[in-house]
Length: 187
Image 1 (cartoon, rainbow, N blue to C red):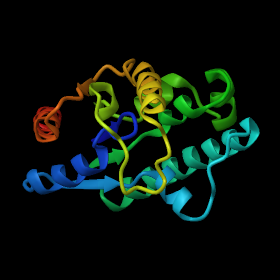
Image 2 (image 1 turned 180 degrees about the vertical axis):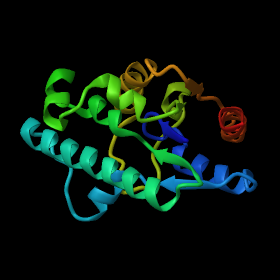
Image 3 (image 1 turned 60 degrees about the vertical axis):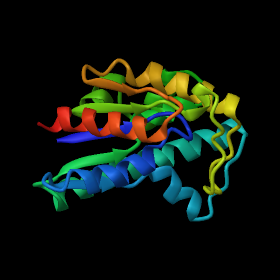
C-alpha cells in the first residue's frame, strides 16, 4: 500500500508523518522522504524563470519516482507513506498540465493510480495561521501558500480515496484527525 501525504506549505505534513510512525507502531510504516527538500538541500536553488522551474519540477518528479521504486523493493512488507507525490509538481508548473505530462512522459490517470490513498493537510494559512518556520527552504508567503494549497487540492481531489485534514486553530486536533484518517485507510 502506498499513501501520499500532501497539502500546501505549512500544513503539518512532516510533523504528521513523524507522529504517524510513532502512533501506529503496530503497522509497518516506511516514510518516503520529500523529493523537493532533498533536491533543494543539495544546492539547487529556487528560480522563477519558467524554463528553470520546469527543469526543477521534472527533476523532482524523476527523483520521487525513483525513491518510491527503491522503497517498494526494499520495504515490500511496509505501508509506504510518501511525503508528497508525483502530481504535486502540477501546482508549481508554470504552464498547463498537458506540458507537464509530456515532460514526465506520463498522464494524470496513471499518476493517480500510483497511490492507494491521498491524505491532504490543508495549509495553516487557510485558518489565518502563520506558516513561517525553521525550514529555510520554505519561502512562500501565507497568500502563496493558500494558492498552492488550492492548486494541490484541485489536483489530488480527483483521487477516489482523497481525505482532507482541514486547517484549524488547534494543531494537535489537526494531527489527531490525520492519525484517525490514516488508521481508517490502513485497516
